[in-house]
Length: 211
Ligand code: SF4
Ligand code: SF4
Image (cartoon, rainbow, N blue to C red; front, side, top):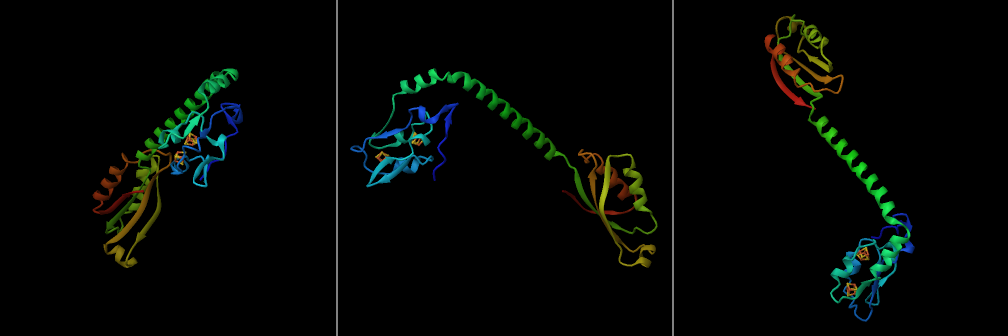
């Protein structure tokens, strides 16, 4: 697979930079190693010889194919020619700017990764499942009072009762709800208050899952 030929190299038109492989066809044994090694589609193999079909797709400064060629059939233009182009185009000034941009991009990526990692460590939503005799304990009311002073809410609340009459007669029922933060904050410190409230009402915490 080849990649598109870059149009410029640090601001210089790529075709003005004399960097590409030159194959000595006499020495080439057609092993195809250069063809397979180069990920830029610079080579093709014809009549069991390596042919440079896209010279300017070559990455300036790369010599990998020459390094692996078993017969030393690959060479590059004189490095002085490249250096002359670098001087003429004052490339170091361009590179300084590119380095600055690269550095700030890396720092921004690092900062984002750190923030995302910190966020992933937060528990912002947890599902609780509680069982017991809800009867006339007004547990929902107690829950509302508990969350009133916290940046929390309870969502997707479900109460499963086997029979309405049985509820008054202390038949066990089942409640499920998600505790969520209303401000992207950690709810871990709040969960013990909920567990404690459930325990004080004689309920059993059947399940607790961080979502
Ligand atoms: S690696 Fe060398 S010998 Fe093998 S095909 Fe390429 S140029 Fe020819
Ligand atoms: S020097 Fe690198 S980029 Fe250029 S042809 Fe060889 S392997 Fe491909």
